[in-house]
Amino acid sequence: MKRLRICLIASSRFPVAEPFAGGLEAHTHALAHALRARGHQVTLFAAPGSDPRLAVDTLDVDPFESSDTARADVGASPAEWMQEHHAYLGLMLELARTGASRFDVVHNNSLHHLPVAMSATLGVPMVTTLHTPPTPWLESAMQLTPSARFVAVSDFTARQWSETTRARVILNGVDTERWSPGPGGPGAVWIGRVVPEKGAHLAIEAARIAGMPLDLAGPVHDLDYFERRIRPRLDSRIRYLGHLSTRELVQHVGRAAVTAVTPLWDEPYGLVAAESMACGTPVAAFERGALGEIVSPSSGRLATPGDPDSLARALVAAAALPRAGVRRHAEEHCSLDAMVDRYELLYDELAAPARAA
Image (cartoon, rainbow, N blue to C red; front, side, top):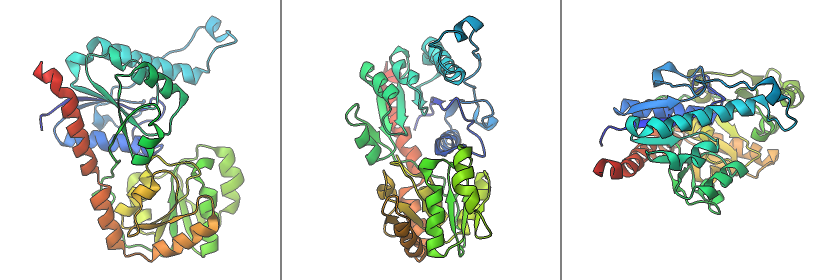
């Protein structure tokens, strides 16, 4: 494989650094690290505070603050929206000017519409990975940029976007060396962003029904939800551990009997499930989105969406699965190496015409 000069575009809101704000940041960090380990030259455009080992070129190089007159406009957008818009606009204009001489391929992992809308202005091929269900901003950009190329993180996500675009499927992957097998234990674990759509309150309810202790970990992105639905239910058997690093998460997941995955939306992939299975810890998950593609009968059990009684039964059944089989499923179907292999082939395919010319 020819060594490539790759530009990765990430979120301008959350740093690509430990502890990760969410699965998108963890995915981008793992991809950038793996590509660099394979000898590629990777430049990561990301939020301030991102891991300096990844050769980060921050998206806010030219911070934006509108004038008093502009802010007085009754139609003015919120300051955070304008800062994000300015960051991506500045990046894409810079790539339009210099990208062809600096990079062989651009890989957009952001959720913003401007990289897609402006991709045709670049003198370098760009591919965008679809990490979410369809959004109006991205659909608009796609309709006006028919030359844009896309990857979806699951068959389910590709089908969701099929009315607007055709996307190649490359399943996400996790570092199965870093997410290493653990011994298991008596309780359940839940990890993720603490927001209503991730359903931590239903994991608590299901754990109580199943008679299992439960540890929860992740950043609190909705304080009102945490104070109303989570904190009042905490006790000696239901604990909130905080926002943990990957090393700490590996330890807690590896010492759990089962991981509860409780989305109240259609998960585009389900990175938490893959991370858990890499630790040998089986998964009990609501059957939403792509989780049916990720979790197999040998690695977990699927529950009726939104039903804590069904999830409680899945917790008990999944906890009885042999951990070696769970780990083997992760190695064979959820590995970072397999994901990076497929992205390398795609990058090479995209860059080939320019090399030939």
